[in-house]
Length: 225
Ligand code: CA
Image 1 (tube, rainbow, N blue to C red):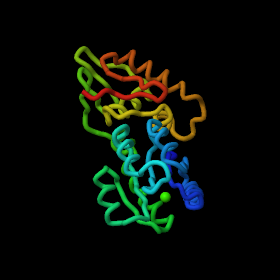
Image 2: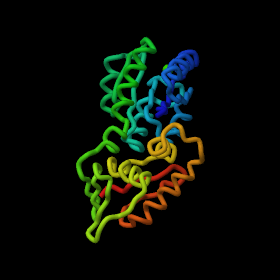
Image 3: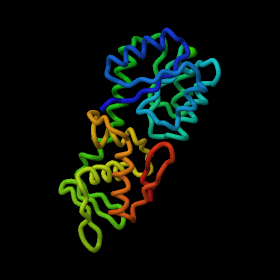
């Protein structure tokens, strides 16, 4: 899958250097030169934020607070040229997942980013789960790929089952249509993300007691019990 990375760095040269470096890693990088433009993108939830602390308009600490409030599952790496020790402490307090003082080699940042991205990859925990998962009134048996409730088995297609597993592994997490598309169909799919809406509609119909919420203009989430 292609990881989506949002990079906030107001130094244009460093920004474009990092973008071209990360693109060679195969990541889909969206660069931001200001804090405000990055703030507006928070709800679109990338797989990783890389955030400079010293920005012309918004304090990077403010930005990380908002990211962690709206999308707590998205990891953040802080980069900073200021008082490194202090920034590290405040950054970690605000919820950053890693910290790198400037100057650094792009390679070092890429290694740290990759570690966080691999940890985030939901397929490792969800689609490969083996223990039964209970979502009352449903019981999911991942190894047999069946879903049951008190009066019998629910017939799901392969993709409906994969979607259910994706939601079940992280209740409460908001998934964008694009994230669902990549997780269920893989990178090779080039069609419309409307197929995601169709798939969710079918799963809702077959398992109406699931609380799958629509997040308008974004995607879906399974309400946590
Ligand atoms: Ca800066």
